Length: 279
Image (cartoon, rainbow, N blue to C red; front, side, top):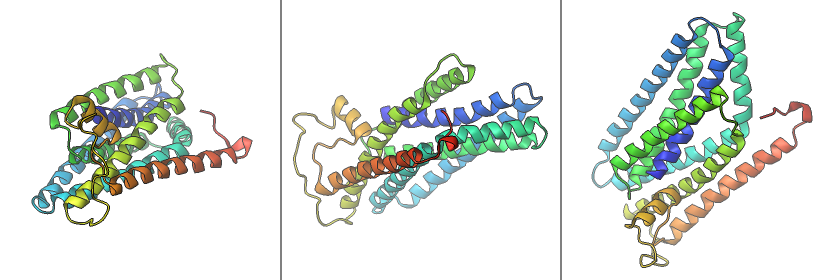
């Protein structure tokens, strides 16, 4: 449930930020609500389509190929999480500025209201599609139930909507770099755990012949079947009997995430002073 909450919470906030910036930039514009709502609905329906086809694809691999499918989905989810964190670290500040520019052009008559609908639709579709893939990866990793994912997702939607609304209304002042920094750390650990679980599925499917023997067993200290163990497994990728391949995948993902963030930070540090955008 915690993994679903973190994923959905973050994606809702990101989509909410896009919609909030568009709303703020077009305040007082006639019919803006109708077009923005239409864009949100279009993006939501598109994400539902992604969810539908994800299930259909999964049905094709029922049986002996299920482990391969699960591993593939987990690895794709890991890749998207890595790209997602890198993109947000690199473009998060520029995103708000570009969206404000779109809103100003609409108000000035240089762009139609359809531009607002398209911006909102793409934002909701992108974040919704990522939620679908990430949550499927969490479900494929096991140690959680559909009801837990649903509850965590609903809480994440509610929490993200509240935070987005409060940010838009100016009732709270949370530096976004700190908010997303905490969530990025959780996402990094989640991605590492999914990568390790993918190695386990590949080993079960016969794709790995080496580095599959458990290195230790901490079930007596923290069982994966206990509530704390399940929380640690879903959120941080904890395994009571990890193999060398799982530990290698886990560590590699963390290193990749840290290296990317370091590169992005250094790139910002070398920007000319006038080219930087304040948060």
